[in-house]
Structures are given as C-alpha cells and as structure tokens.
Image (cartoon, rainbow over all chains, first blue to last red; front, side):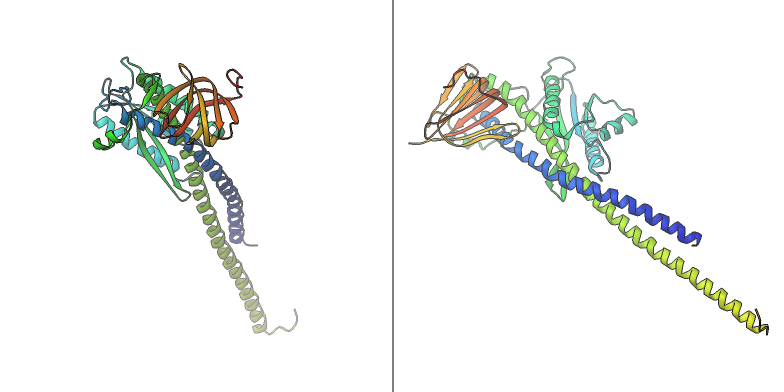
Length: 302
Length: 92
C-alpha cells in the first residue's frame, strides 16, 4: 500500500473515532433536554403563583413600599450582573453568546456611569473573565445539574443580602444574563432585570375593579418576605432554563460535528480510492511498458 | 355550596390541586382557616401544618416551613419553601 493511501486511511479512522464520540455526546444531550425541560415545567406553577401574588400586592396597594420596587435606585451606583454559562465546552455558541450579552450590558452600564460587579455561574464564564484579569465578585463553579434549585437559592441569598445592604457597598440593581429556552431548536441569550422589579402597571382605571386585599400580618411584612422570594424564584427559573438551553445547544453542536465527520469520512474515502486506483494504473502501465520493451528486444527466452 | 379551588405547590413540584371545602394554613401570627367566599387575602406562612379538607370532609395534612398563601375569588394558591411530614401539632 502506498504512502498516500495509508495517510488517507489514517485520517478516515480518526474521523470515525471522533464521530463515535460526537454521536454519543449528541445522544446524551438529547436525553438530558427532556429531563431539564421537565424540571423547568415543575417549577412553573410556583413561579406563576408568586408572580400572581406579587402582581396582586403591587396593583392593590398604593402605600406598599419595598426597596426592590423603587424604580429609581441610585444610592451607590453599583450594579450586579449574574451571568450564567456552562461548565463544559462543546456546546456551540451557548456560553459565548451569553458572555457577549453580558459584555454588551456591561458596556451600556458603564457608559451610564455605574460600576459593575460580576457574579458568575459556570466555568466558561469564570475563566473568560479571569483570563482577562477582570474582577469576578463571586463565581459558583463547578455546579451539579441535579442541585440547580439549591444553587439558585444560594445565589439568591447572596445577592438579596447585597441588594438589601444599606451601606456604601450595597447594590442598586441586579441583571441576570441567561439563555432562554424557546424550543429544542431555538434558544436565546437574554438579559433580565430583576431589581428594580419591573411590575407591569395595570391600567389606572382597572384598579377600582379589584377588591382590596387583606394582608397578613401586614402589607410591609408580606412585601419584605415576598419580594426576595420572587427574586429567588426568578433566578432558579433562569438557571433551569439555561440548563435546558445548554443541553439543546450541545445537542445541535454535536449533531453538526457528527455530520461534519461524516462528510470528512466520505471525502477521504474518495481520495483513498482515487489513490489506490492511481497506484493500480501505474503498476499496469509499468508492466505493459516492461512487456513491450521485452517484446521489442526480440528475445524469446526469459 | 361553593368550594375552594386549591393549588398547593413547592418550588419544585405540585403537591395538591383540586377543589376543597376548607384550607387551614400556618400564617405567621397563627393558624388561619380559609373558607369559600372569604375576602381576598395574601398571607405569609411560618412553619406548621397545612390542612386541606376536601369536599367529602377528608383532611390531608402537610408540614411546611415558610411560604405564602394568596386567596382571591375562591382561588387559593399556596407556595411553600419546603415540605416535610406533618408535625402532628394541630392535626387530627
């Protein structure tokens, strides 16, 4: 076998090996999407319930005041970005588009004269900033997929405490950059502002049609408890959605990689065949040429 | 007789949904009973037992620790942080 053929065969074998890995990764991701999606759905009723409750307080009480509800929070000029990325690579543009969104947000906020603190989930985002020698306030990595809810509570506890901090280094605003899971085929990195809360203002006239709520023990206590709880629930929900998106993104990336390996194999098989054919042709030409030369010399014996 | 439409959820799962005749929740300042046609209420829960009494009078008891309860137009929504076996206090 010629050197050229051997080279092609080697490439084919390596592409086949990688293809098997990609294929396996793709199937793992596909299996995990449904689980992650189920987890998102399991938390939806709670999120709906709390959103409804918050909406009720916000629309039914005029005197209710909570620091997170104040639309103009500019005490310290410090804002936090919570960025959610993956721990592992091979997930296509999942982490990089989230990072890009965060950077864009970072630039906008800095242009407004605010100082930005970064909180990061996932090794990819963490190493991105550490490599560039940029300060990361706190990072949670590596994380376990099965403990996302607990992780969400932990993150929320940290951030809520910083947001409620009345001192010099308290936070004014909180943005979360995560990836929204629209469908298996579509995910989108997006920014959500959690604090100050964007309470959708109902029409002013609609107020009168709602009955007055009774708050137990009282409106202030209810708000103090409910608002951080809402922030927590949003963070957990974004975390879970991002996880589902990561799997979907990885599945797509691995599908593409499998297809690429396939076309690579086809290409090299063709080249190897051509090389083999060329070798055979060359051998035949040499034999025929040799025979002709022998016949021309007039010798009968060999 | 009217009844309550109850949705009882934790952060990660739905515990109980359906129609009930009466619900008792552990509000911060003491146990609170909810009957149909009660005024709209939003309450913060402490730790204790949530009792759901369905239309046939059968009670189900869940131990909870922290959460909230909203009641509006006979729709009761209970969201709790953590669920554990009933403590027995206040249950039948």
